[in-house]
Each structure stands twice: as C-alpha cells, then as structure tokens.
Amino acid sequence: MKSLLNQGKISTAPLYGVVTGASRGIGRAVATEMASNGVNLALCCRKSIQELHFFASDLQKKYGISALVFQTDVGNPDSVQAMADEVLDSFPRIDYMVNNAGISVVGLITDMSIEEWNRLISVNLSSLFYMTKAFVPAMIHEKSGSILNISSMWGTAGASCEVAYSASKGGVNLFTKALAKELAPSGIRVNAVAPGCVDTDMNACFSREEKRDLCDEIPLGRFASPEEIADAAWSLMNLSYVTGQILGADGAFL
Image 1 (cartoon, rainbow, N blue to C red):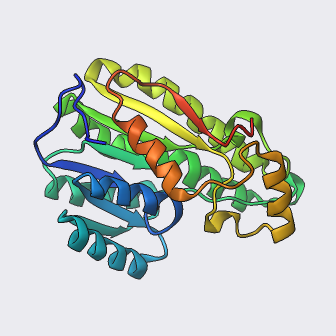
Image 2 (cartoon, rainbow, N blue to C red):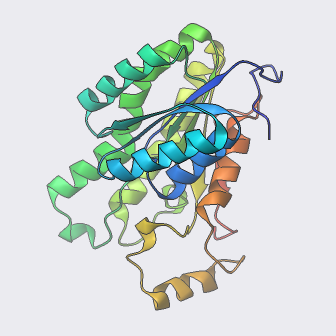
C-alpha cells in the first residue's frame, strides 16, 4: 500500500517516522512494514539496543531507507525529549508516529506493588503524552501527519488478572479519540489498533495449554501474527479521512 498525504494525494517526497518499542513483536513488524514502503525511521527501545541496531542495519540494507536508533525509556519524559531533540535535528519533519512500547503485569491486582502500577502506567499511557509533547509541535508546524497508537482489546473489555494493563489501554483509547479531535484542525490524524491475542514475547507467559484454551475462544481459532497487526496498522495510518478510530484486530474475540 502506498503512503498517502492528508488530501489523498500520493506522496513522492521522502517520508519519516518514529516507532517506539521497535526491537521486537508488533513494533518490529510495524517498522518493517513502514520501511518496505520507503519510510525513513527513528527506532527506539529500552533494553534490547544491540538487537535494535542489527534490525535497523538490516532495514537499511534491504529497503534503502535511513534508520536512527535510540535507547529510550518512553516512561521517562526526559529520555523521550532527548530522543526527540536528536530526531528533529536529523529529520526535516515527522510523517508518522507509532506509539507501540508497552509492558504487562499478569496477576491479582491486590498482589501488584505500587511501583509496578506506576511503571506500567508510565510506559503504556503516560508515554503517549510524553511523545505528543515532544514530537507533535513539529507535526503541527507542517499541518500534516499520522499518529498510530497500539492499544489492546482489553482496553475495551477489561481482563481479569490484567487490571492495570486493561486500565492503561482504556486510557490509550480515550487519549486517541480526544487527541484526534484536538489535532484534526492541524491536519493530523490519530488512530489506534486494538489487537487481541498476538504471537509475541509478551504472551510467552502463557503455557501451551493456556494458549490452546485462548484459541478455542477466538472465532478465527488462532493467535494473530505481528505482521498481521502491522498490516492493519499501516493501512489505518494511511486512510486520509479516518481519525479518532480504534480498530479492533482480535479475530472476532470481542
């Protein structure tokens, strides 16, 4: 799918994007999809920085794009701003911003520590505010751009033993809808994809039997691949008259 400008025109200029949590899973798949469509990328992660460097190098060789790499804690506003300063010095504008980084804690809410709660909320929800503060002024200056947030079906339905995660993703959904209204006059679209069960490291905590039980509840009968979520994300990012939407990608689970 070719990338589009706000009025539905085909873009011939170089494109630039930012993807958080890009070293693995959905973030890695989204970055690959963007690179395959000619988007120059700024990629970040918190821990797997060597792996991210290798990944960025592969994208540059395969697709001929430029790829910047940052070790960034998106739950820390100073870390986000430091990355943004370097990215905005290197890229002439930001066409796409993908807020993908996220963490999960599975267990009873009564067993969750205050530190775990605060960390999860900072990474999953507050990071959207930090990224918006850091990058959106440049997008407003250009009066164009597309923001894509990775949510979850649990942000709509809620999940037992994932109360904090569900709450954070519910916040992502409303952040998306409200920001879309605020930025629409500036020509910036804001949407989210809400995946269901995806075959990523985040779901490695489930046993084979638990995964089989989950598959029995999914009408499509299987987990999604990260590439399938990336395909949905890229399509949504380029729909020129769609904003403020939460696209479910859960195999009809909900």
